[in-house]
Length: 428
Image: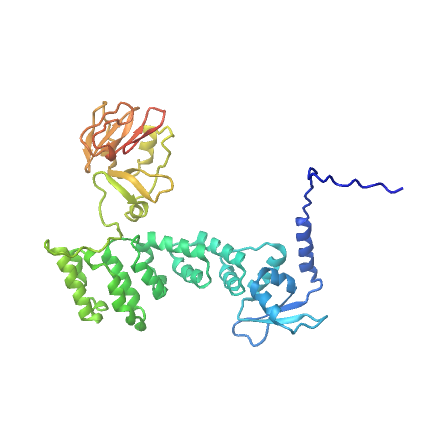
């Protein structure tokens, strides 16, 4: 007799079982790709310079449609499919290796990216609207960029809508402009990117004079760029020049092609920088690094510090039990040291001071003892505390607990317990 199957309870109290055949489905897809089972379309790739297709990739309309809305639209609008015969679709100007890798990716979900194929894959993925591959290529490029390659990668990323790579490229150009502007690749940037650079308030550069020279160098690289000269000069912040720097450019061969427009810019800048009674406000400064850290300074971008040549040699949270031995060891091979505090996620130093290592680490011998170096008052009381203050008073009860000019104090406790002070904030 047949076994009765109990009816499920109607009160919804039964528990279900989730069956996951995802890995099995993926294996079946891979078999279809490997064995070319029931393929109904062939991608025929004709690279640039070829008169006929050089590579053909059998595949399935359904699979292409799942991954690419461009292919799906093509199939929906096409009535050329013949039952029992695979339709051939010509792909003009594509890289055969990139198309082959994409077809394999459609079935396996796996793609190997490296320096030799990422640009071709990005171009093909963007052309055929394969979003996940565009994103993957963008992330890869963003991780691989450096000062030498960033200009080329930026142009490619923008051309193929790789937003993450574009964001990282712009961030690197902003923080390392003083190096990137010297590269030949800088001269190949598009006018739209030069405009973005010239209007960027966060640009880290030696001075506005350096920005001017970079812009003029780009304009002089190709004769047809002279059409952009006046617009470029409009974006240079001449009122941020020093009087001496203005004197260095008043006869610049490229800028002088703008005639009276350039002369008016110079005259306005001379008035703004040399006349105390001038009502013109200087334009907003960029992140200029042509200055020396002196006294106690606040909110200095890390990128500016790096541009000055400072290199990080020690970083610990305030909970770490910093010792005098650690401080002396990390500064042993240097003549100058910059001491600072910053939030982990911040691009700026909260406050900092700098000086000669021998003076900054000169031992002090008591709760109220300090000495002056480069506009700050330093102490290094062995086994007690290390730090600086703008005010001529310290109280090393634990960290420096003095309240006078509290915003301008930094203190590290050296007694083995960690903790200290950043401005008015005590950290334990």
